[in-house]
Image (cartoon, rainbow, N blue to C red):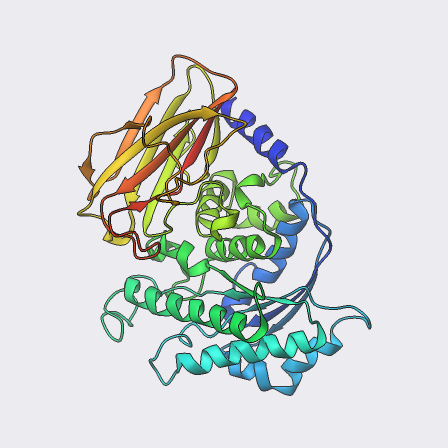
Length: 408
């Protein structure tokens, strides 16, 4: 029953979402076309339709093993820009995915060349479509057990940080060359990092994605293009929608969907996240009733609901830090904004309840069966690790995204 209420609740949240039909050009290689027989672009199209948007026009300029310099200069690749749309139409977004090693300084690759090629591709597209925006599809580190560890990378975390940093620089280069809001990063690699590079998500080569990882990539890219949260979507698995028809044959049902959607939204741009924290390797998950833990930030609760919050140190980054779980109460119609001194904090520190501090070598968990309900109010849960944040720059602590547990 609780699961049905949750589904109806999320459908209500998404009911007002609309968007204009978009023309989307994809440049990339096997990380874009691998698995499903369709790959990432078709999944993005079906995600858009399931979210209530007009079906976008998708053009795939994908070449296995290719680098961005090839897409920027090859005559056939460049010609897609002018030839693949009817006369008078323009591109809304170009999705750019480089070779999985291209943003690293190993095996003959040069991150500077990667960045300049990304700028050149956007220049090519905007010469035809001046308002087009770039979405940089950040790739991921290889799984644990791959031959790239311990050389040239000591760990997947080192590979991830190298790739991530150069995708961030490429976005900054595009903005510097073409203006504000011309590029965003679809942080696929960040979401994969929250899966801790477990081989179960990868093809046996420990590099290419299984269907679940391809879905996660499509979720991140969809969110970057449409500005919609994936957790607000509930695919119709029975009867099947075009999206679920693509997912079901690969064993992807609602539980897997919810797990991946929470991670994708956790890695979206801060403006798209409901209660953004620092954005580091620190994850807050919540669970209601018998449903599994997910990073979905909004869940309905009522009297008798077993409700839990769990904070985890990901990739051992915060294992030695003291962790707090903070709980606040607020009117549902007036969610709290960022704290003035620490904008990554959403709970009111002056009135919040704090769990006992424990180190995060093991997950910090609070679980409670509610004996009451307060319709019109919500609980807000947020985690704090007392260790500096590498992303926000806070020298004292790192904050998870917050979760709203809404009474009905």
